[in-house]
Image 1 (cartoon, helix red, strand yellow):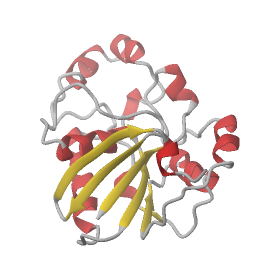
Image 2: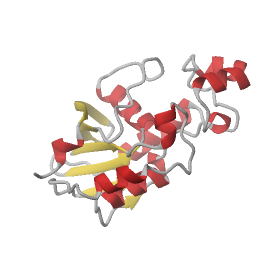
Image 3: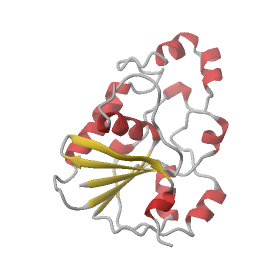
Image 4: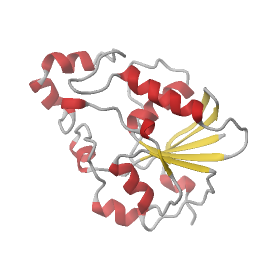
Length: 195
């Protein structure tokens, strides 16, 4: 199966360089711009993160019949949410220093570890239909796309740099059960829209 992953539309936290919070929404002008776009691909299934910014992206694109899947949520950054990296370093110096090591078992205060996040993503992947035919769309977040990129390119799962792609960038993978191969990364949304 071919899997297109679309990173949600841009939020004010994205613009401010802050860790997104669960209730972040995409910018009003982004919604207006997306409402003019229609995807030219017929998807056999569409999965969307249940966070508002992903749902808004799906709705603005006029998608219907999609399934919300909590496994596509962004990693919970706990107390880091809504803060910039500099804010985190100032307020939580030890925790932020540990966060920067990419330790798979470290969770920010009140947040989720990389390992728990990766386990969610892998579980979702193995639940996708095993087929050489068909095409799926997932509207998700940078952290999910980073793990898919690492899995699809056979990279270290817990080290820098981050491969989140751009907001509204489409990354394409070939998926067969737990096997995944990167086909393209963070292409403009125009690569899957009609003229």
